[in-house]
Length: 299
Ligand SMILES: [Zn+2]
Image 1: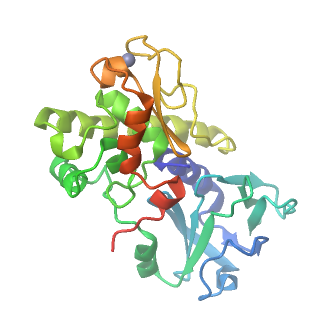
Image 2 (image 1 turned 45 degrees about the horizontal axis):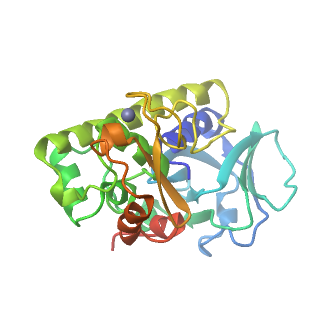
C-alpha cells in the first residue's frame, strides 16, 4: 500500500502538472470507485486545481470552487501520467482526470476493487476521511508517546494503525523498527524512556530519508513504479538476505496474508522466536487483513 513517502512522491510529481491547470473532464470506468453521491463529480469539471494535500495515505485534490476530490489507492491502486485524453482500456483502468497537458489515470491491479474516490463540497469534508492518526513531523515526542500508549499494542500494530500515526503501513514500519533496533512485538506499555526517544527519532528519520529519495526520483520522472519493496530497504521484503547493519539473515513473522521482516540480531536480542508463536502474538493484535486495518477510523 502506498505510504507517506510514496504519497509525498506522487504529490511532488502531480503538483507541477496539475496545480493552476483546469480539470477539463473526469472519466470514471469503475462502478465501485466513487463513494459519494453529492456533490456530483461533474461539478469538478472546468475548475482549476488550487492545491494537493496528503491526508493519511490519501491524496486530496482541491479545486478553485472549494470542491475536493480525495483518492485512496489502498493496496493495489496506482497513478499514471499519460497523454491528454488517454483511453481507458481494460478492467484495471478505473478513472482518468483530464488536463490539457495530460491525463492522470488511476489503475488497480487484481480483481478486488478497494481504491476509492470521495467528492466533498468544502474543506470540512476532508475530516470525514481522516482516520485521525498524528502527523509525525508536526508533533513532539510526548504527543507521539501519548498516541502510541493510548492502547497497549505491539509496536508493529501501533505504528501501522491509521488512528494512531498517519501515513505508515507494513513496509515503512518494518524499516522504522529496524532503524530503532526494537522488536515488532514489544508492547507499547513496556517501552523505556530511551527506547521512546530512539523510536521517535527513527520514525522521523526513516520517513524523511525515503521522502527525500522518492521525491527526488519523482521530480525527475513520474513515479510509475510505486512498490512496497525497494532494493535499498534494510529489512522489508528482504527475508533471508543479510541485514545491512550486522550481516545476519533477515527474519520474518507470517500471519494471515501479511509478513513482518526484522533482524533478530539487531531487534530481538539475537532471538529468532518460533514463527508460529510470534505470529500468534502479533496476529492477536492485528485485524486479519491490511484492508481491515486501513478501514479503522477514530470516532
Ligand atoms: Zn541486523
